[in-house]
Amino acid sequence: MTSGNLLSDLSPTRRSGRSPEPRGNGSSDGIGGGGQSFSELFGRITTNISKVIQGKTEVIELAVICLLAEGHLLIEDVPGVGKTSLAKALAGSVDCSFGRIQFTPDVLPSDVAGVNVWNRSTSSFQFQPGPVFANIVLGDEINRASPKTQAALLEAMAERQVTIDGTSYGLGVPFMVVATQNPIEHEGTYPLPESQLDRFLMRVSVGYPAREAALEILRTHGADPAGGPRVEPVVGIDEVASMIGAARQVHVAPSLQNYIIELAEASRDHPALSLGISPRATLNLQGVSRVLAASRGRNFVIPDDIKALAVPVLAHRLVLTPDAQLQGLGVGPVIDDILTRIPVPATADG
Image 1 (cartoon, rainbow, N blue to C red):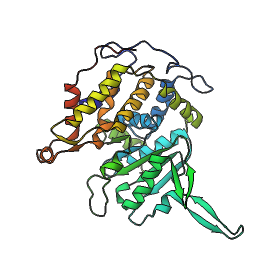
Image 2 (cartoon, one colour):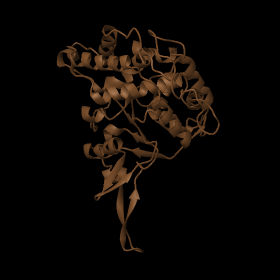
Image 3 (cartoon, rainbow, N blue to C red):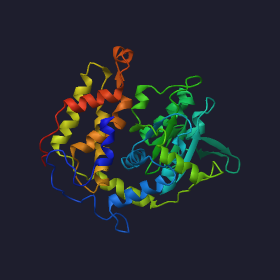
Image 4 (tube, rainbow, N blue to C red):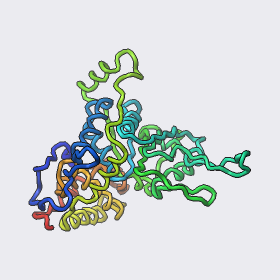
């Protein structure tokens, strides 16, 4: 997909049209006590994850962008390509709490969110938090959970809190859910409906490794399939919070905001789509574009930031018409068609 391939090409100087000059607190300003720039810390995280996930730079960057944009990630792929390893490496690269939920049909909502347990010593109920009370939560095989259990997790994703017996408990900051699912298994699964898919900021696919990366995996894991490189935290949770705050300050010109709206309107009128881009999706696309710009050392968004992230942010939210499905048309080519037809702003005003 052409829009996704732009990710590795973006640099501080690569531009479509004329972009505004940096303003305000630039994304290259020092973050945290070490005075390191946003892009340096971003590179440190992605490099650390690359020790475990070889040859998948773009997917790794998308996962980190998702974290820093305060979103949730859905990884959809076949078994054995590193979905769980990616989530664990992301959590391991940040000095934060990590929770894991292995979904099966018999997992209950209380197994996710927590439950009130009777405490004999105090003669009262005491809340026992579930695995969702962590900064990064891995939901393995989410489509194996019942719709009621899925809803418990997705409520936490949307509200960033859980409510047990009328009492609300806030979740940590940052809070990110990384959910995985196998697209080719259907027996005993409960596909996520469109309304719940929309809660995920991005959907990505890890894919099979290239030949050299596959050989490197064999070499590094040796005789122990469970072995291989381990990741240690390379950034603190306070640094991540500072990066999130810095990304929010990245400038998006009004002409680029108008460009995002034009993309959304074009999707709603596209003959191959029965469901187009929602207002939430436009906000998400603007947010991730800010993070991508900051990761490239810029404190302003350029059109290529938006185009590079359009497919992972939008594809899972769009619904093809029955005719388009019968023709074998994919959502990715439809997004590429919209990006081709909508003119990029010639100038990015301030």
